[in-house]
Length: 146
Ligand SMILES: [Zn+2]
Image (spheres, rainbow, N blue to C red):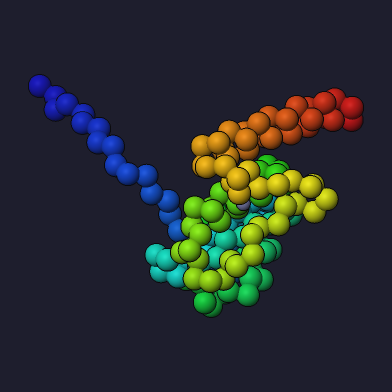
């Protein structure tokens, strides 16, 4: 008789990578938009994003040698990168070691406002999803014109 397979669910965790230029080059593709979180050990230190290339942003980051680890999330648009950065910013407010004193800026020329400044997480995420949906519709319409 075969032993049964038992699945156990555990709390979700993310991997953080050592914050070294060679590790960033190995783990982050070039010309990828996204948001990132820098850590000092297990403590959040700084949140940022790049609307052009996370890899370039991180390999030239002023906190290289200070932050010990990083994690990042690729995004397919600057709107998504901004929303993710803002979400992390609000979730980690007060835990960022005083380095993120200024709220994340919206993408240049977008005129976007942060969905989490005036709403709780759930309402903010709903608003962000609405923006992504509108953005996707615009992208598909724009794509048919080319
Ligand atoms: Zn905000």
